[in-house]
Image 1 (cartoon, rainbow, N blue to C red):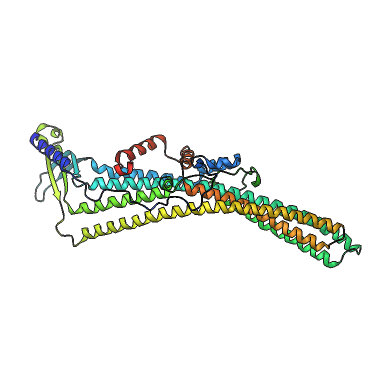
Image 2 (tube, rainbow, N blue to C red; image 1 turned 120 degrees about the vertical axis):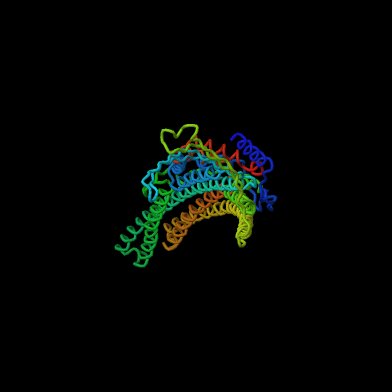
Length: 491
């Protein structure tokens, strides 16, 4: 038995020394990165790594984002999927180690035509170990690890989208609130005018035509109110779901015109490659696909495994553990293909085709990221210009309305002039509020598109909940990534 163990040891050492890993090693593809953005903003800052939503200076918004990170259902699902893929890595990695099992049996039988009853007893340990000579298990583990990292980036993408969605939804809710205030104020003002003109009509001072005109303007403001109330209720319901709650009322903080204006984040195009989780996920998918090519190619080579058995067998239970009942065995097996009808070569071609698809997808993801950042920069610049122009327009129409009322009181113009000025002012005030909302929304989109350290800040909040990975699992997860990740990825 000792000589057989020596033989097994020699086989293991040779397999370890001469073992290789088939398939291509991963090399990060070179992508065409623009030197600078088409649009830049002079007052851009390095605040991309900060909790940018706190720059709105609204504690209610801060609390809503924290609530969403703690209770959002999509974040919980993403966290559970990370745990699932971490377990899958452990399943794949288990192939590195010997598989030990046990066997126990007790049987009694009587052969045909005999009156004799035979007993047999067996207790043994079984050992099986596949030697990863060609790197199949290493490539499979590399692929599983990359899939785990990709799933972690999916979770970070969910967190990124969640924070941006909560901020945008809350700002839009305050936008609708302000529009409702404008509509209610206008309706009350026009209601007073209707009452006054009806009195004047009854006294024969004004015509029925003028009363109809002022009433039509009153109804124009009135029709806006239920529409805005409907939008507010729908926005509250949508925001409640983001928070992980049933539909209901949403607390309010500062009015939209009192919110702080976050600074525009600074950054160069190449930084986006390391900031955005969707790009990181696409690269991990590429690493996994690259490793699967090696897994497919390893099927051309034989599978070499060691097996061993040690135990006891006896016809008497009392003699089972005696030295004379000892049994053992050790062996090495090699199993390889001779003719498969093209199955292996087809699997290799399929895995290589998948790798090419994922490579193109990675490049497309990078280009889309550049587009989204550039679009957000353009929107941020032009939305601010639009807001400034809308503000000037509102100021001009306020002057127009004031002068029209003065000239009407002096009898120089008809009330139609007053109605026209108020109608224009009402529409301009609503558009100005919309433009303010667009400015904030463009900044939220820009922070989302740029990525940055704020994602880790938000992820930290999410990890503090009962639904995220516990500390022990997280430490094990991080250790496993560092231990098995390819050198090219670690760099």
